[in-house]
Image 1 (cartoon, rainbow, N blue to C red):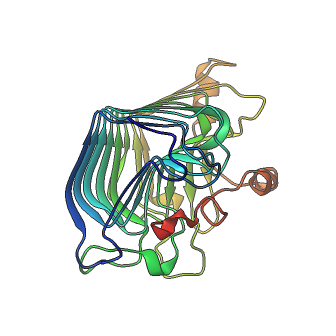
Image 2 (cartoon, helix red, strand yellow; image 1 turned 135 degrees about the vertical axis):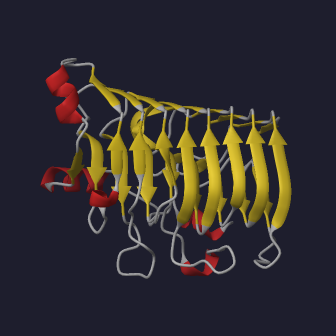
Length: 285
């Protein structure tokens, strides 16, 4: 058990030697809980790691503006069978967040519990500072690629799934999401005006979504500016509005929706990404 660390709970990295990543890392049946300092502090932080597995972890109450598991430039990994719980997360915090050139990671069969309307449970991508990207040889210009999110249970949060500057590969399928507000899924660009690819070519299929209109809830799918939602595939998702469980309500509420003036106002009070102090964790520190 790792408990009561001041900043990050566990750091695994390449010691800033981008050409020689850390390799073959296994974290099995560990517990990380109760990070002392508030702010952008992670329970598990990996930067420049290849071939890894996190299995059966229990993570509770990491930094309230950080991530339970944060990956920067990591490849060929698996996160599964883990429980992530935060009781007082801020809107800039997250559960699992690969970014900074991360590629080919499977996030499978985890349970994430967050307070309603705060934080992003599973986010593929972010807005990493340029000097901290670690791409696979020959790759460039994406936050993440090949991120598969499957068979997870997400309770609460400001969004269950977010895709940010990801050019394709992987997908979001066979998950259960319940009680998110304002959104269940977000399609975002947090690197506008750069060479980083816009968010496109996603798959969102065969997921079970339960939400309730009214209050903080806005829409099942939120589409930000400078993205390509028309390249996304939505199929086989079952969306149930618990406040009005009729077929008409289900069909209407599951459609992607671009940001409006009202959602823009929400975004000013609920930061949408990593440019705030919460995301400078892209540095690998």
